[in-house]
Image 1 (cartoon, rainbow, N blue to C red):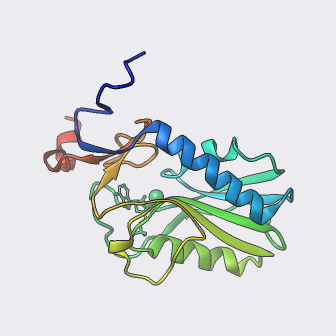
Image 2: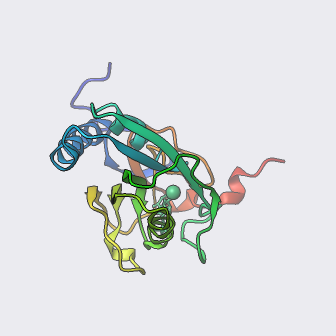
Image 3: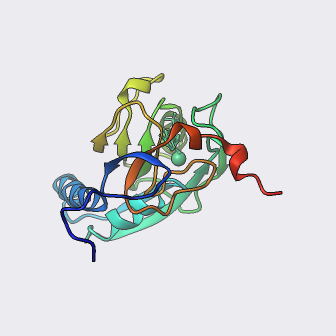
Length: 194
Ligand code: IMP
Ligand code: MG
């Protein structure tokens, strides 16, 4: 075990660490309490936006003792870029029936808002009894579409972040914390295979 007073080093490709594993874990516990105050002991259906929200969803679910159902929606990603390009598209949609269900939609980060707008519209068309949204990170400065999440883990500055599910060119999702990727590492061709 490293000494607790050592500086956090998540990965050498990061310019700075924004959130440690411990900070994330603590915040998730408090989000779980917020969910309890809204849902009580009732059942709800979690819809996780994959791949980015996998870690957040699985850690949050383990803090919830309500009966929950889980389904996933896959939306087009940034690909090998750090800025959202154009309109996101749904690649894989729901398999569970959510009509008359209480639905909690979970994503990793709310950025321009286009993804959450698209997915909430799709979910609303399926007539859930209620729909709430939960994101781990909120980059308010980049919002292009008027949408806010009901539950937010952390507000973060306008920097490209990776780790804890968030990727650049599909890399770094496995880091246990979240940090800012060094500018010189924001170059997807460096990851190309020969
Ligand atoms: P939006 O549609 O612009 O709100 O973007 C939401 C999606 O973009 C998220 O689900 C992430 O997959 C991705 N994204 C936005 N900002 C970042 C970032 O800083 N790092 C990694 N992925 C990001
Ligand atoms: Mg995503």
